Length: 446
Image (cartoon, rainbow, N blue to C red; front, side, top):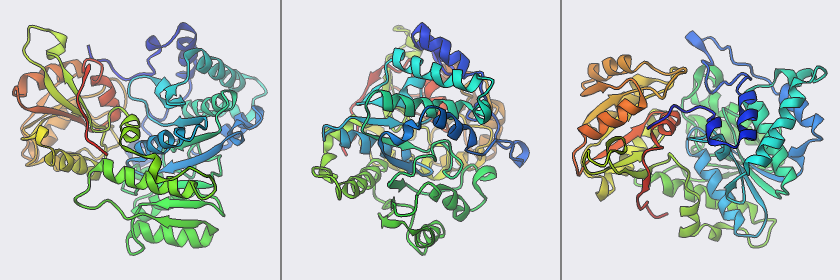
């Protein structure tokens, strides 16, 4: 059965499940409308996490950090860099968001999620601190503040030497922006979270660039200087006083993975300036494969509809949480290059309420067989029936499936034996549909 994407305490030890229930009592802006009606209500300041970290004696200063921001690809690039660095023998941490199925995915040491017992212990310490009557600003901590502080504490207590940290949202006021990392990364800049980050790519770029400290190095694939966002990158580098290492944006003929690998290799080259044995050669084909994250052009096979062995042969599913039009267009372009993904797919589509559903659906026009409109579950998501109406107004053949379970059954029934199904629009939707898709399929080479 597919499940809605929650913090999933049921997939944790009893001790961790209890702490996750406590964590869920805090405000979680991943699951709330950040700007209903275009009016920002999301709390945006760093004082709570700074107060937590000060009380914990600043665990974020105990390891070297690489800080990764961007609209798309930042989780994959962070994972590639961390997986490459593991080959040096150093103890490496990785912090990414959001999770797909289990919150433990976010906090990784040496390529594996931190043990439930360790994560529970460190989370308990952070939550107890936030609940203390004399906690001061820490009492205003959000879900993401608390989990970010927990990750940094876990990294210190588990002896992490270097950690690759993915920004959650934006950069300037993101909970991770307490690092002053000497090497930062900007993958790209597209219009997203405009009520929070700004209405232009230039404004959004400025928000993301705020993670780079004076004297640091930024490895950026955000565009050339004549590009709107690229111009802001170049000007900010001059004004703030950091070094800019530009990487060419994605080539029209380049796959998403190839572009991510190229950027990660450039990051490793910069890190190699001060460390012997660090450089682009760390990312060979096997390392790239080991770095792949769930829900990023991930191929799986459902043995049958809903796991029922009598309901016919399995179907090939591709899971990608693309949630901005450019990302979704890139996913479809990658699929067209692949002979195993011949023909237009059946698409299972759902999106957050603050995402531009019309723009995302427009990308599908003329490229897909039909669209199954659904929702990841309770929370701030577009209503499936409203999505169906939007899709049909654009000329798409569309159906409604109220729940992820319904969407799984409907898509399986609509897909021919030799066809394929794309789940997209939201990583939360990917997480809700992924559990029954149990059999991995060979993935592309780096």
